[in-house]
Amino acid sequence: MQLKKIELARSSIPLYDYSTLASTNGTLHSLILEGCKLPVAVIAQEQSAGRGQWGRVWESRPGGLYLSLGLESNFQLEKALHPSLISGWGVTEVLNREGIPVRLKWPNDLLLEGRKLGGIKIETRSSGGIITQIVIGIGINWRNEVPARAINLKQYPAIASIEQLAKLTIEGLLLGDERYRNEGIEAILPSYLNYLDSIGKTVTVNGLSGQVVGINSKGELRVVLSSKGAYCEISCIPGMISLGYY
Ligand code: BTN
Image 1 (cartoon, protein in one colour):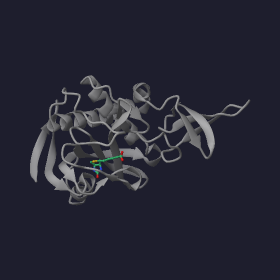
Image 2 (cartoon, protein in one colour; image 1 turned 90 degrees about the vertical axis):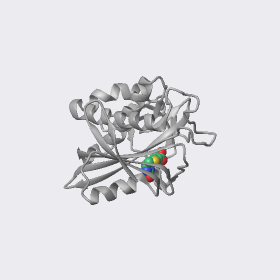
Image 3 (tube, helix red, strand yellow; image 1 turned 180 degrees about the vertical axis):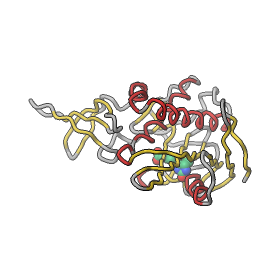
Image 4 (cartoon, helix red, strand yellow; image 1 turned 45 degrees about the vertical axis):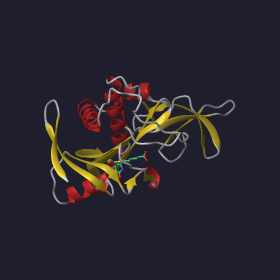
């Protein structure tokens, strides 16, 4: 392991750089338990037990970015979806500024050319009804081989190294965090919606068909159910519906 520093415009962040780990999220939790000050980042060239959403394993072969960022936070539990939204938005925004047309699949999958470029797994620590620390784990396909429904950044030479991708990713996560702290979710939502690929998609909720029309201020997906005559809109949390596997 090497302890490095990521130099940012106005600060620097310690980065624990490993060749192999079970999971960067797991190691970051251990660092927090040992009293490590936040913010801090952990990166690994490969993971043997990368944690994906819904208990899935995240394939983590060399050539991909496997990074976790730990941040102090102050989210009420009813805003538990906000970290997902602002993290996905921040990384998408920064990659778009580099000319990479990344889009979002709600709440925070990164898409490129309609295929999955990366995913985010957020794990939180809370106390007294407040989320006090968050571990944002992000995997982005850079040069690693990917299945047909996924994509990597091979065709995008603007991202020339994994170190550059790691720095941009941290900048994106911090951009989302800072904008949220200063301006709140309402300031981020319009731009988030511009990047959202899910609008207009047909989904099934409890056997009923509906159409995605937006996001509410909690970060839930707004779905209008297809029913003759009556207008019926519902709000969905992740897991209630499937937006398809990319
Ligand atoms: C998803 O399933 O879409 C989320 C995948 C998140 C994977 C990243 S890789 C770095 C970090 N460490 C983990 O164990 N998981 C996340």
